[in-house]
Length: 265
Image (cartoon, rainbow, N blue to C red; front, side, top):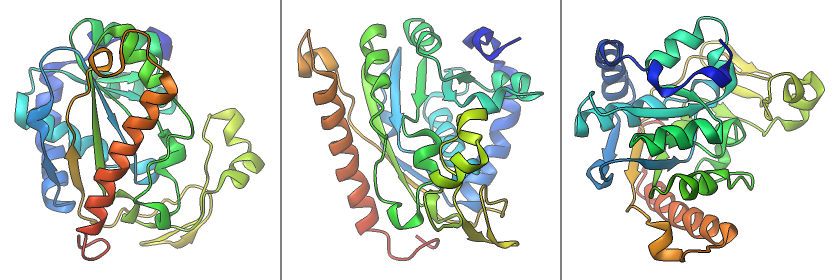
């Protein structure tokens, strides 16, 4: 089974209910997660659009998933559009059963048209492995496919921002040069291979294998955006993207201003 053949029918609600308590314990205890505004997510198909932080072990995904399940119950599916690497080997079954889908427009549109909530991280690994000094910066690298997906499916967009993920270890640089040198950009479609500093291995090149620090993760869910109502029947993709990123940046700036200390929150 290739990643192109994985669809949302693979999700196993029984499996999700088994995994959720573990994710909840990690999110609530280790990362002291705080999620505000999840009740703003409307019923039916909706595209959640979030920033992404924490490198290859980004924990903003389970934090949002736990809060979504607490608000709506595990019976309401939340699908996560993810990088192909998650579906290699046993990942096809494990992540597929918990609601992960390959980040393909047609896959997302199918789930959304069937009335499912779906979350996408347009910045992907590029944003998740940005320098820690840019932890309060929204960076989608010009990717606007999420807007076309929402328009094609005819669903609203709900922006989400999280602070704290880029403090789970110290990302010292972007690492795009090293990614090209190692050819992981060609082999695995990974655009960044930063130097990182953390526990227990200290300074590590490429893909920091250190254990994530227990940085407090704070998430804010913003108001839903009805694209047709706000931007008309023939909207400009660039205009919508600019508005959404500005709203997300404003919310992330507020979270950053209220953050007293790194890691501690």
